[in-house]
Length: 256
Length: 260
Image (cartoon, rainbow over all chains, first blue to last red; front, side, top):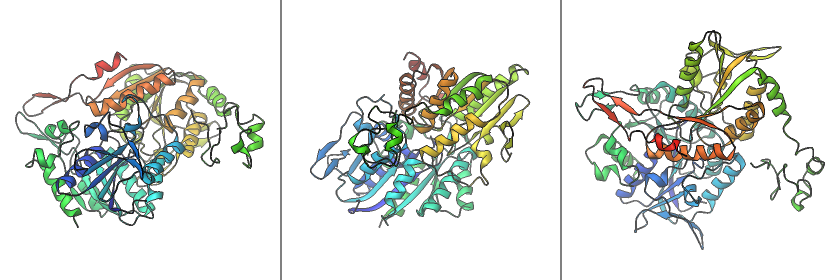
């Protein structure tokens, strides 16, 4: 399992709606733009967002001789995506499953997908510290090239859940690469005044307290928000934005 | 709704199935006799227990959203405060069913409080005279403590919250849920339907990526015959404190949801 994958990066957060899927997709796109072969696995079974963000809705998975063939974003097949959304008939269909069924599905995603050779496999997760997370950790325990990136927003109510996720990583023994703070500050397009809608500095102080690397803060940027649904890298479309700077540096720090 | 236990043998027909205890996969299963006797397919005794416990609660409302971080907990707490402030004689209870990420103790400003056990059950924490709260956050030793539980354990906790908390006489019980359509939601609905569930309030934000998950949640409600009382759109617009110009995200998309 995952023998041909050089590095596995889990994108985690205890809190929902902080931008795990945005970080996962932008990181995958940035790495792809840097010339790597990247896989993106969406294990949020009840709320899969990756296919929408990458504009891959309506595509389906095919059974190949060596397993499920992921959906590729580009013709060169440098970014492959796997998500439960590709298995649903309609985009409105709910997945009403209890834990054991989710566990079985994730195991299949980890074992039966034919990723070929990958430089990076990025795994987007749902919020929490439950079935999906325990399953993925149990299965990746034997994969030494695995590490995690935590996503948070600046306010305390999010930080509190992310602290729980740090404990989870420590208990399961997965190394944490660092923390990204999303939605930190909004620059008014009219007067350029920056407002910290969701407070400020929470991610950085959390990184300091937990002795983790701070990977940067991404502001609320409606231009980047509009990229959701198009599958375009921020580094390509808006190379001068703060978002691009953070993801560019992150991709560089992951280079080997 | 699957009734297959987590440690079941392969091809287990499920404890609620007609073939329970009789299928070929059941041979050798230590619980074969229990399933074959029909004992396992009886309704969960907790449903009756919860019905009795919550018989003094007039309205039970779930706060749902497929998406995380849209403001379920904020809406729940504001609704709780709003209902409680309207009439001092009205009692409101909030149950935080988000086991892995309980936010209510912080949102309602009662972090660090303790729940006490008495002869009549667990006493919830009182935020004001007529607003009480129960959350797993009160049971954790430190804010760093993670609740690393699979489904069955979370369901057990929710069952306990519903059957063992001494709410007293309540006019409203608001149940705040985690994102998704999985264990917590199925359990809460399953247990509360028996006790008379008024319906669900669905929270969303205007972006398509949130609506995508919220539509799934509405289908979930339809499948379980749960009334959707209405949809609340949060984070609809932002007024710049400096220039007073308001910025709308995608604006008023939730209206279309109501038509479903």
